[in-house]
Length: 383
Ligand SMILES: Cc1cc2nc3c(=O)[nH]c(=O)nc-3n(C[C@H](O)[C@H](O)[C@H](O)COP(=O)(O)OP(=O)(O)OC[C@H]3O[C@@H](n4cnc5c(N)ncnc54)[C@H](O)[C@@H]3O)c2cc1C
Image (cartoon, rainbow, N blue to C red; front, side, top):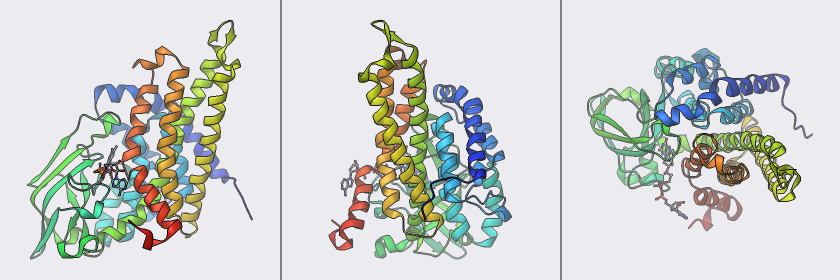
């Protein structure tokens, strides 16, 4: 049986979120970019709507939403403020990791304020010397009595300057490579911990930056899951976030395309509305087609995840196609809106800057294609 319909509750949620995105997020989207400030009150408002705890069970204060519902949230929030989709996609990834692997004590302490949006947690894998080759990380965590002592540097981390805590990946057994990596919860207020923000091209309010850990001491209970298994625990979570990132890119691309359709219906050239010229309507038709294909591909991946079926290849497809198509679509829309869209008076240039970040974050297109190729050829063809 094939069924492409959303449930009544999902359709209702989409409506509520579309209204929220239009009335509360879109009007200030450019303001936070220009100010370079993180709108914490908006994050908390999204928490009140249940968006920061979608993949967290209700007993820990979450919304206990399925993956498809989480995808709807990513897509609709992407229409209003692309940067703030981190509240959905990053929180879904981190919420799942903590819910699956953290100790009961850690879950009781951290999940309720995280799910409500009161506390923010980032995730730190990347380092100056290892990005795509994530397992090549050098940050070290050494056990000393009842503590771990962590030293190293993390780079490119979303929410670096605003999060209250981070899931930090560090080597607990350098001899074992990817099998010797563990995950820890590290709060940003500890001695020896420092965060420094970047001047980014896009997603400016989300305070991306570097984390410096100089012999940061944490209790041994802050280990998440098993020692030396951190890397494998998180990999499955990326299959969710990659599908969500694909959808949030489609949300912002669709919003831009709809605004552009309205523009070309009224703007005249040579005595006719622009929309009458096929040179204008055909790219719009092509982009609508791409958006529909990528959306349904992503929802299918989320359906597979909800139904416990393999979806790593599908997630990698959404992750490279989504942001790649979004930057093409938004670029074309910018041109179809003419010179005014090249100014900072309109949100289109900002959307273009924002989606390009997601062509890199969470793994580049080449890395996704390596994952897809591995699915096609088998592990023995890994380079
Ligand atoms: C907006 C944004 C948000 C981010 N948020 C986070 C975060 O919250 N937490 C976190 O840990 N990290 C985060 N990152 C970092 C991101 O995960 C890394 O930048 C990414 O994995 C790529 O690593 P790199 O930048 O070191 O590039 P490199 O690994 O040096 O790659 C450089 C280029 O070489 C290509 N390349 C590398 N290896 C291969 C290969 N085997 N075959 C073909 N091509 C290859 C890459 O595709 C890329 O084009 C974020 C980055 C951005 C831009």
